[in-house]
Image (tube, rainbow, N blue to C red):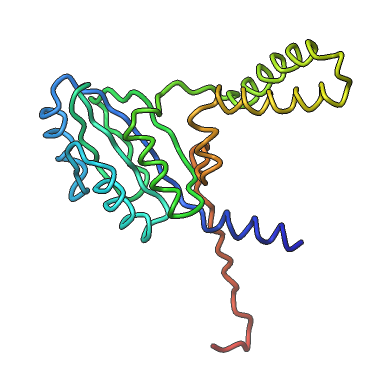
Length: 206
C-alpha cells in the first residue's frame, strides 16, 4: 500500500515536456513568422546546454506543461521555450512532436542535453518497446543456445542479460532517458472537472 502511494505521489509530481522540431529553408524567415504567434516566449539562438537548461527550469518550476520548439535549417538552431502545449501553426514544416513525462527537475537537464546532441529523432513506433524486447529476446535466445552445454541456469542468465542489453541499444536514447527519469509518453489528456450544484430546499438558508 505504501509503495502504491509512493508511485501515485511521484506521478502527481511529474511534469510534461513536448519537443517539436520544425525544418526551415531560411531560418530567419521561420523566426519572423513564428514571432507573430508565440508572443513573449523565450528565444535562444544556438544555445549551449547551460543556457537552455537555465531557461527551461524557470518555466518548469511554475508550469506543469512546457513546449520546447526547435527551428533549424540544418546548420543553425533556434529554440523557443513556451509554457503549455504549443501547437505549431500551419505553414511550418514540422518534422515531429514527442511528449515526455519528466519525473523530477534534475531529469529535465538530461532530456535537454539529449535534444542538443541531436540524438532524438522523429522515427517513432507505437509498439517500439515491445518490438525491441522481442528482437532482443530472439537474438539472446539464439545466442544462449550456443552455450547449452553449460546448463539451463546459465542459458537463462545469458538470455536475460543479452535481452536487456539489446533492448537498451535498440531503444536508445529513450531507454536511457527512462532510467534517468524521463519517459516517452502519449499526449496527456485533459482531466474533466465535474461540478455538482446542490439546490437549496425549502426552509434552507445560507
